[in-house]
Image (cartoon, rainbow, N blue to C red):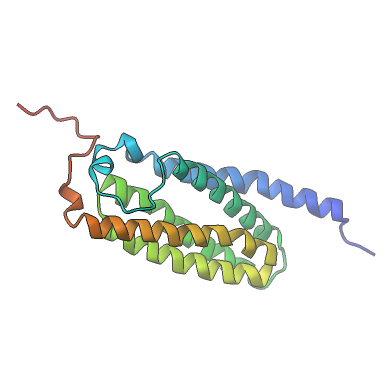
Amino acid sequence: MEIASRQQLRLAFLRWAIVTVPFVVLLGFLSSRVAPMGSRSRWYVALAKPAGTPPDWVFPVAWGLLYVLMGLALAMIIHARGARLRGPAIMLFAAQLIVNLLWSPLFFGLHLVGGALVALGAIFVLALLTTLVFGRVRTAAAWLMVPYLAWLCYAGALTYGIYGLNPDAATVAPSSTNTQIQL
């Protein structure tokens, strides 16, 4: 005798996904609003950028898709009741997401390119551990994290390139949030 039908299990997963996907996307959106980004940031516009830097519109599209995949992966793990590694998987996910959400304020808000690069390394390590533990709970959840890991490598290469091309990045140009009037 079955405890729950496949349809009931699917609906239970969807209930979690309806919560986790918007939650992860919202957190990413809020993090990106801490400081002007892309062409809205005079500081970022003034930076020398490495070859392979995509146009500004690519970043919100890529991150939006990645946050949706991450939210779905989290829903799969939360839905895996009784899985031995469920708790540690959720904790790792939360840890990597917290560090992820700090990246934009570090880079765009504080202009700490080196600090953002260190944060990316920490995000990658935590996201890799998350993916490995997710794989022990639900293989599909781990696969949903793979594009994120790939993007983190790309973002790391771009950030490293910016770091190398702009040793004085913190002083390149005033922040676009500077509202002081200079006489």
